[in-house]
Length: 604
Image (cartoon, rainbow, N blue to C red; front, side, top):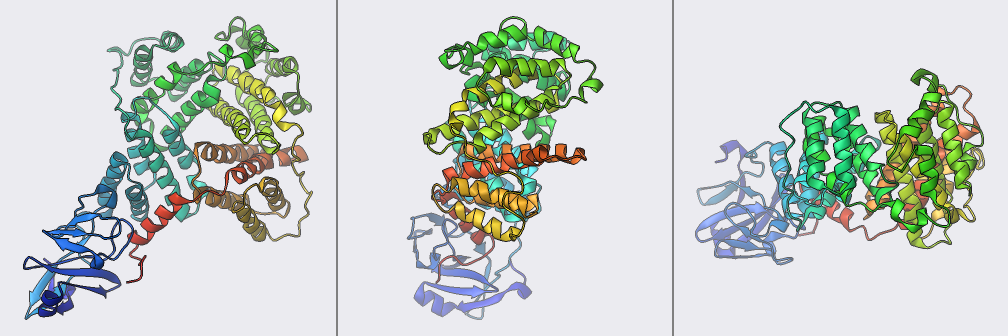
């Protein structure tokens, strides 16, 4: 019941009885009032689905039906018969002296954060994009940290997808990683993007039924790692899951669990075109956001992709005309699952403190981007022998992989964008694990990524030019350059222009944070696919790491300045190749945002 002070005059009861309905706006709230079956009912006049005026709908047998998409609502409480439409808000009324009064600003029965948290779960369960958008906006508007809805979505995605970790959860991890690089509205778009992709991935999927951990926490780590690798190798999902869960519940460190994963994920080269290791990297990065208390369920979702992965050592491209696997086996000390040879090379490189001082040879990038796989393998082996850490060497290969994207020739087939993309995101994942654990197995990931860079060499024939620092002068307005960059995403095929505008932005002294916000805006307004979202996130990460490297070097050379730019030039070109799209998702987001904030969508 509304308080007297909160009530506003709506209409004379006799007029409402005669007309059956009316529409008014009070305190900025559009209301539809109905006289039905002897009762006065008032609802928000905007259909919660798309904002169509409900005053133009039909009321029959206690049901209000919107004429646009035929969404139906129980008139007295506003609950919908059709979950895709969402519930409509109702307003308390009172009749005094023949006049109907209404409270246009009633207190919610529950706080907004609780309301939207429940709606988020509904959006996930029913795969409802509009509800996902509303709840993403509502939660962040209510001051909820993005990590809370992310944790809800992560838990849902691992529990209700029997096929395990997939593109949706990877996108969720990607959007979380770029969250701090975005403006406030785009943070909402990012959360909505992750939520809707997870919901879509889980739609019509059977739920996952867990295998428990072993009933002991006393298995030594080395033995558990060996069991896990063996189970993955013979594609025994149940056994692998029990081993992995045991590692988590036994309290092994985050670094040790990461070692368990990266070792199994590199026992065969370049599993599933790099997706498996990237999935694993996104899983552990997601835990960095929501907390490792979620590790048990989250990491168990990686088992299915691991045991079902395609293995590059079984593919002709890695065997002929040059047997790349044999080159690796010579370094590894046996077959591709070995690491003894790598451990010996690392031992030659000295103690960890000494290896931190390693600097790459001036010709290393030229070798990595060359056409001699033997020379690539030898250069990497020499680097380890000379003291290169897994992290330092992974950074070099990630830069070479980013260069392949930056120099992708547009005369190639469109699908080959994904060939260079997969190598880049795999190299980024190797780099991520190398920063998390010093496991020798990370070196295997480095070699695998480097040979994938080699296999992609023809896609840079001829290479698209990457603008050198200073090539475009410094007299442009950075904001003007960013406007032009966004405009390139409105036109098909503006690939080289997009890369040039990024280079111009750096040349005129623009703030990289503004560039990332602009790229994020360009990404999230589109119906960006799995690979595009991956690519941008990996580019942001590689830029940050290269920027950190450059800031540590007082003698920041042209090469270091170029290294900062290449990932963002690469991703701008990749984005331009895949844009524009129909932007359907952003249209849904815009409708949800206007509905949530009480704006009128359709003129009454």
